[in-house]
Length: 443
Image (cartoon, rainbow, N blue to C red; front, side, top):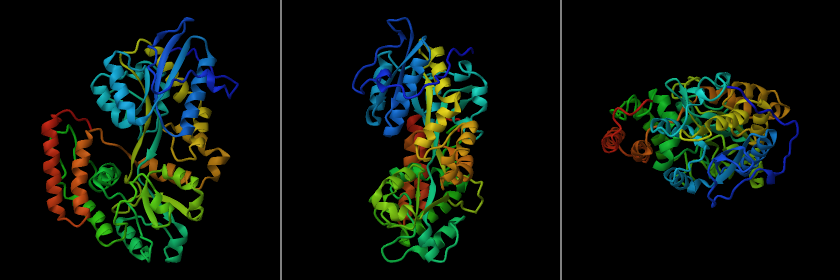
């Protein structure tokens, strides 16, 4: 495909040039502007402030860099995203480009909502996507989203000062080592470990560990039958149960899994959390004493294999609507923003404080070569030890994950483990039947 877009040499275009619309407004339809440009409507789900600033600046730069396409950006709060998107689709006014999570790619492709970007973008753009991430956006021979970032869901955060004081010279590499270290580190008001403990949190935070211990999820293949009765999941339940019943972790879920406050407040020596916690921990001045003694490692695998996944990768892509009247122009914008200039993405990931990570090999290499990255104590560990081995989140309905997690929580709190896994098996089979999932899966 011939690209008309060239990058501006200038930067810092005024935000007023972006044409960002308020979330409560209804964007004009795509098509043609009054001055004859092709109009592309881009919906971005609201994230951290620095992400909004970056998207706004990039859209402004794109619009100024050529005179044939104008992108109109609408930032939509996460809590109204689904409602607004469904309403727009029903009215025939779906955005041409939108942010889409990895877990939604395959369902949206199956329902014909998103376009095959391999037919709209340069082929070499897809060669740069990391090998383990490419399957997240690929269905058969088509590519239905272009990745922006990945976020590991499970990273082991640990206090170097507390481990040293306890005579522990390295983070654990197996579940048994983690349990032993947690026992040693649990003293006074400090627990040795923190990990998700309620069904809604366990439903997604344990995905990587489910895969680690069983080599797959409790719903596999074409989703015709559940696999929660795989004996390997009993080992997973035993791991959680030991942490909880031996009181090696907090007994009440004061904070959800995604919130690393237990660790920041100094109440735990080790904690499982997503990579995003780096931003949370570094930003709180009250936690400076903890932050200066914080290190990260890949979460231990059940058997110590460092290449075995213990995390899933969440994150975001840009997709093009299958019914867009300006598909070519939309794809040009996606390519310009995410698949061309590596410096543009290096700036983005530096702005994240290295709490989110590239999906492109060239961007990972360029980022690692910057002075800021060289000085970051966490980047190499996460990009080299965690991201390459992490798996995609399952694309089956959330009800499946919640059914498994409900039984996992019951086992964690001391319930009979085989009975809990049998309940999970029955609950997932019920979801399969009620939602008619059999034969629809491709995981």
